[in-house]
Length: 261
Image (cartoon, rainbow, N blue to C red; front, side, top):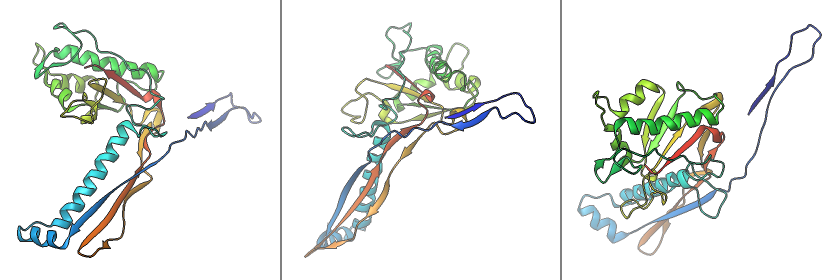
């Protein structure tokens, strides 16, 4: 955090001071791994079908490691001081959606949009105002925003009002620096979405450069270490590993959360 004090100028005045406040919260990195295994006969059999068995298996390993790493940036790692953007202990309390004319607070009812375009816009508008209040005005309507939600909730952004204007257009006109991103981790926990949230659909608004400095970032301590290929009697093994320190929240006031849409 930047600090400063200004004073009246004088040739011999020594008043005023600029500095910074620093804090070093502890984070515990988590290392994780997977192993590729392939046999001589497996490689030959897959080769007859024009399948690059070894290359495909390594791509699967890398994909799995990266998807787990992405999950830690949302939820951290249980049992460690390793947090994500959705469960960092420094986050401000979440706000709730306004009641909808059709009943409840949700944007969608199954595959049907339950809220009007104006009601959805008002929920997002409340998130922006929440950030402005949390930041004591350092964030404003012209700030850069990242609006995160589930792909399902993003579908509700197509709701159109009586003037044939949808939610996306309303946001673009009123918050020119806002960009919408979707991720399944913002969705409700279901059999089809095992990485979803137990508290239901979540929408999160983040100002990435609040106060002129990064308000948070994804952190890793190791990115794809490939171990040696170990030859066995008629097979091979290779360990691939990575490490994550979760999402580092530098400015908690720059994140606002809406739960229950």
